[in-house]
Amino acid sequence: MIAKVAFFCAALAAVSASGIIAPLVNTGVSARSQTQDVIGNYAFGYNIKDGLGATNSRSEVGDGYGNKKGSYTITDIDGRARRVDYVADGHGFRTSVKTNEPGTAASAAAAPSSPGPYADLSLQSSTTLPLLLPHMLLQ
Image 1 (tube, rainbow, N blue to C red):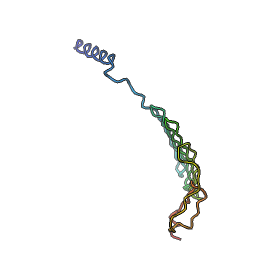
Image 2: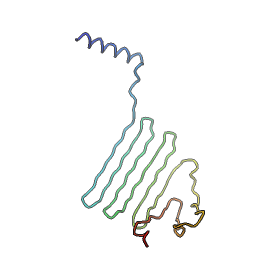
Image 3: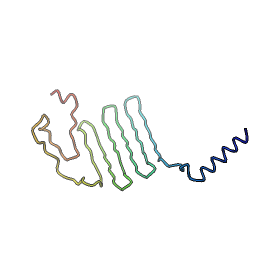
Image 4: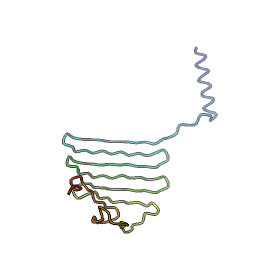
């Protein structure tokens, strides 16, 4: 029995040294956190970095009244990056986007091509959208 184990170990060492078995690959690291209390206040977040260096993360805090504030980030290995900060509360849903991605230069918000049920809603910027709550739709 000992001879079989020794033979197996020697064979494994020979195959590993010859490069037939691929070396271990770093697949990245991640971390997360989450808290919540009994009245609805919460916070969560995560960070991920893959084996090539690309990263992404998200964090958010909220309260029992439905107010939320958070952000998410994405960074690619070629240097493209995006960060979105957002707030959702009684004043609506608002975002701030910072990016160096191609084709994302700041511009005027798009105008509707035809009047629709939301034609009377004006956008303050291309990244600020009104939040319609169910009770607002019934009015």
